[in-house]
Image (cartoon, rainbow over all chains, first blue to last red; front, side, top):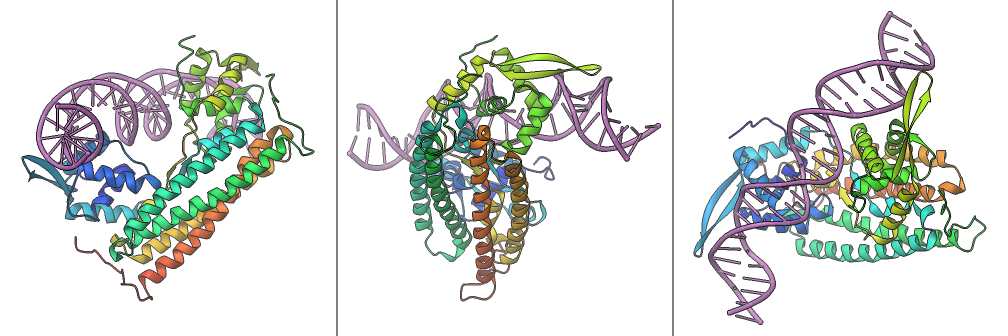
Length: 199
Length: 199
DNA sequence: TGTAGCATGTAAGCCGTTACATGATTGA
DNA sequence: TCAATCATGTAACGGCTTACATGCTACA
């Protein structure tokens, strides 16, 4: 059962959290849930990590594994244990809440616009706006699927938060695309075409 | 000089990008820059990683290292090479732009409100709102420091983007705190005090 | 004189990914 | 019957962190 007191990475708690909503899931099903929800606020761990993580949680007694006959084969189903629920609740109320970490390749690249000039940056922002719309649609589908099931009111809240975030981001990105364009072409600001061509 | 064609992690390009603004920096100075700017849109790598990364970039010929006498000791200063600028520009215009990844512990925990009830979640959102204000102030100072230096117009744009993001987030979080409270206490919705106390 | 900041690294180790492997089931 | 999906793992490896080590310099 290993050292129960060791502290776990947040992703462990994320998976444990998924199991706190549903009775019994296979690793495969956990992955699908993670892909469809966790992905928007955390990460979608690789399949291999899901299985490794579930094995660890099982060895700590935080989830219980059961081999269930399923037609001709057997699949392994995991459910959260009472100890798992307690552990998860303790983590929720006792551990310090970290500030979000954003890895934003679009912002990172925009930072370096002096190397490319305005036009490539504008195009990048347009493509990002498209991707945002797509993402938003995916999350909207998730929100839809949740419905108004009372047991899922917190997930619903989080989904709506995400939708709002995508909407705000879309507005800002549109503004940036405009500002970049005007800065690079037709205002009084110094032009940036291939500025810094020389290092 | 190693294999020049290998592709690098984005963090390498981030550091290379910092060097594309300034003439010559020590590893220590690169760390300070990363902490004060990169942190908001990407990551602030550990000192040890900065040095390792700079060594790699040097071995690839993308930066040039020079030992500069500084008082009684010598410090190692790095500057981006012409090859480095080209490499960075190529990355900017040719490599696919990934969608941002958000690791949002607050959202992750809010998802699990059914385990704690409304009040702890409301408190967490309040604390997050405080942290947001603090962060915003730090970024505002960065924006201030940039001023209206034309060579830093893109970094300025990105900083303003960040400020806007923090402002939007603050508004949404305030709304969430209210909704969580009313959902948990005084509306017609089913109460959540210690719902799911039993697993 | 001592502490904080400047400065530079190495080693161990965790988190998480991709690649690799394998096999059953379902439906076109 | 063939492909997609369900299902479960192991191995190798990269990225990044923490811990450890070391020494100089400026200033209170």
